Length: 539
Image (cartoon, rainbow, N blue to C red; front, top):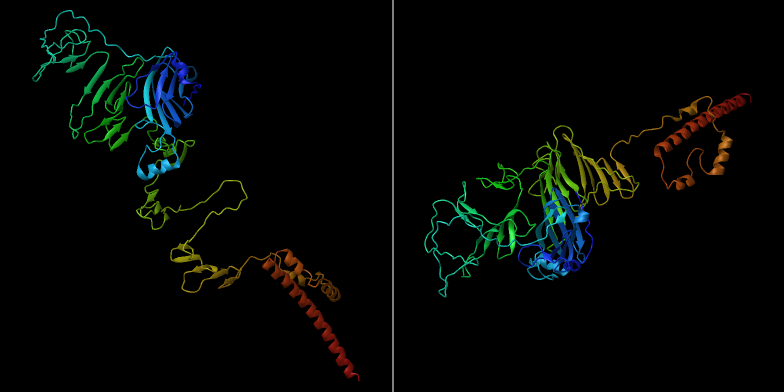
């Protein structure tokens, strides 16, 4: 997309040099268009928050947003516009306060508190042309003198008398004609100042021929109950440098609701016999059928004219994906669907349940696969050590929360009560595990854990250095705990957390050492017993 940066200036400075106004729709425009050969200014006629200026033509699109106090402008030297015809559009965002916006929301009143005159349009469009690197100055084409006739018309003039009895004549002195009966032309008719005697009609039935072509429908209904709007078919602008286009004009409303520019491709708008509308195609197969060689797109633009923040969304599709684009915020793509995505990839049921892979979700969110690939992945790629709550289950009613796993006929529940967390196999008996808020763990079964690879059987090896009893006694009296066993200070330093498996093996080591002490003690007792018996026999 090409961009341009028109310079700032005050429109009235230029007005002294060239105060020419481009042809615009009737009514209260939002800006006056002032133009010279190399710059166009738009002098706003109201107090607006922002004004968006868009210029399109010759395959380019220019867009810029101005603050309400700034002067929108198109600077030919800065924008580098090529020769050709262009369309401009101004969109104004009025100034609203919170009370005004509330009134719009609640009452639908879209003009409360606006700093502009009632009836002012917030959108204004027009045309201009660049020729030889300069803007074509607007100039209404004059009424041309009729082409001189080489021979008189074979026409009978029926002069009409005005109310005062005088013959009613046009400015060129020719008489008006009034035919007080049906008019039947058995042939073709040419209307306009450039029609000539001997006009070659070809297959034309009615031809309009001059430099200002209009067909006006002027309704003379006078009763309030009858519609009386005046309409007009317009071919091309009358202003020099204006647009080559065909329009339907709402004369009384000062608006042009329908326009076709010259050069629009065939079938730009096509309605077939079934009421289907084609945009870019003459064979629509749906109610609205859009055809484009590159990413057919529909744009939804909230322009701010009703007091709400401007926002633009695009809905589009191509060979890569169907997507929704947030054109206002960096053209991000919050929703994308790849071609060949399966049916019911995303399904929202009547009760709001979301199915992914199913059209009959049985939960608030139901993920279904039939090929062994069902999986839920929650991932945060930010390099951070911050604790993240990746899954949160909250029962606002104060009741318990359950997490269930089902494998065929086996069901495992992870749930909580007001006082403990439970794990339960739904096999008809009590829960298999319960953990309360004090950290007390209850297991209805056997606890099996991994153990150290070295078992204290090394105590029974011949080279094991068993601490002598006297040294053991001294150690216990000095340290107030067994050697190799954590002391009170050790447990306190560890915040009263211990490796129970390691402690069990430390205690097993002491039991095996105690076994050696007991065996040695038994040998001593046996020896003393034998000596005592010997002494008694020798008495």
